[in-house]
Each structure stands twice: as structure tokens, then as C-alpha cells.
Length: 373
Image 1 (cartoon, rainbow, N blue to C red):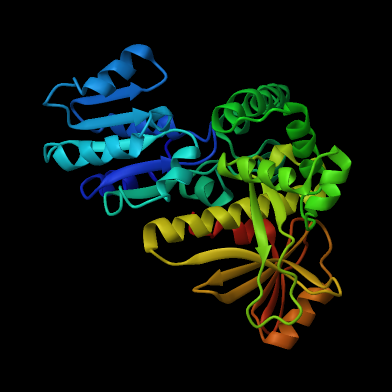
Image 2 (cartoon, helix red, strand yellow):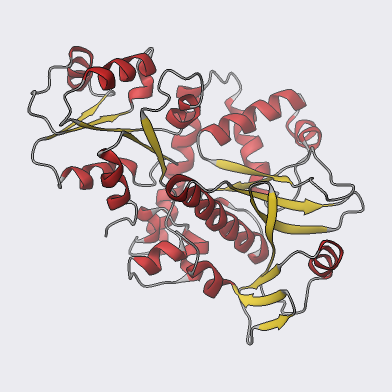
């Protein structure tokens, strides 16, 4: 199976370096190697491999190389300076792809030594929209239960998918987190992760988690920052512009791997919708240069709408997620009525789609299939 972004990345290679960033095991290395098949003399080098590392440091690949793929390069000291020098002195025919962990993305925004020399491509798990574009069979229940990570999604059995996830969680904590940050209390980190899995869709209180784990709120925030930098979780913050009494401090936390959600059907659906909307936003920013952001709405009296799609800091659409309730959400209607915002209620189990002026009640799958990516 291919990925929709393959040709988009190839097109950008004629202009700049391509950074492929995203969660671990989302398919970054696989996609880079698939792109290499379109070149005659490609070279793949992984900084974790001692022989490859020496070749990276010495730059001893053949001068005829037309595509250079550098994997896990962020583990090199001063890797940005290395890339800057490499890019500025490379022959015109040489194209460069850089991929690895999410740390690459986090560091690419620090400083400006690489400014103007690369395009970022966010490779996230498969979505309903991407599956549709790839003409793959679509199973929303399977996507919710297994997530859109290629290996568990295409596993022959549900047990194989669970075995993948078990190893995935262990690797995240014992390998990725330790590589990224010196965490002295791995047990506290694991407990924090477990609590986040149970609180998907609810505003997160750092103080509450700190009390449950017996650590400080500052440490909780640090742990969540690490999990976010590694593309394990992402936060959705409240939108505040022109929304009265909005709470600014409490984000909601979602997982890139929907299968990690420890909650009911409603929480799992909401997480899957969150990943889909985020992926849509990244794609529009990466390929259309449109400034889309994902927020949610909440007032001090706890009226809340799950999502607000924001373009150029202005709300474009507000979205409520429901597993099987086709009745119009009261908070959705309230925000729509007060601020005249286009509103959509996405329902997984829905017999008939409905429309009330600027408010639509739609089947979740139908709406998500039509996203940009």
C-alpha cells in the first residue's frame, strides 16, 4: 500500500530538503524507502548503525548519489549545523530526505540555522480520508479499535494488533522517552501516561494528576511536554478570541494511537475524530500554506463543544462528537446561536442525517472521509 503524501514529498525534493516527521511507527522510514525506488542511485543511512554513522560523518557516499536519506540524524551532536553545511555545499542533482523521531520536528523550530532549506511533511497514522483516497477498504470500527498505525490496522487478527500495541507502549517508555529526556522516575511517567489514557476528552488538571501520581504539577507538565514532543499525545487548547469567559489553562489530551484510549465508545470516537482533524490541519498547513488550528470551546459554567476548526485565528466550524445520540447537542446549539458559528454534530451510529439552518447532524464516517487528508 502506498501513502498519499509520496508524490507530494517527491515534488518538494526539487525545491528543498524534505523533513518527514510524525509518530514512531507511522511509516516514515518505509515511505522514504518507497520514494527511493523512484531514484536511480539512492543511499539510505541510519545514524544508529555504526557503519552508516561513519559514512554520515565522513560524507563518503558516491558523488553520483541522487537521493540521500538520513534517518535518526537528530542523535548526532549539532545535527542542524551538519545539515546546513551539507545542503549549502551539495551538488544540484542531490536530493535529501531527513526522517526520524518527533524530536527532529521539535528541534527544527529552534533557531534559524536551517531556515529556508526544508519543507516539513507530517506523516500521521492512516485516516478515513487517506484510506478513501488510496481506495482501501474502510472500516471505522477497525480504525477506532486498532488505530491508523499501519501495522496494527493491517494485522490479520485483533490479537496481533494488541501484541503490537503492548510492545509499542513498552518501547515508548523505555526507549523513546529515555532517548529524549533524562527521566529519573519512569514509574511516575508510566502512571501519568495511564491517567491520561483514562481522561481522554476531558480538560486536564496538572494539579489533579500530580496528586494522583505523588509528583509536582511542574513535573506533570514536563512529562506531558515530553509525550507531546515524541508524538505520543497532542493537546487541544481552548479557543478564547471573542468567546466570553473561556478557560485558558486546561487543555484536552488525545493520543495519536486511538487504541491507547482507556475509555468508553464515546471517548474512543472523540479521540479518532481529534486525530483526523489534526491530520487534516497539518496537511493543509504543509501543502496549502493555510493556517489551520484545532481548539475546543468551554466556558466557566462548563458549557463545552468538543472541537473548533480555526483558520487564521477565526473559527470556521465547531464540531461535537457523539457515539449514538442523534439529538441536537445543547452546548453546540448554544454556541451556534450566540456567536453565529457554523456547527456540525458528528454521530457514529446515525440513521438519518439532518440539517437545522447552519447546524448539521452528520454521520461521522461520511464527514471524515471527505477531509483533505
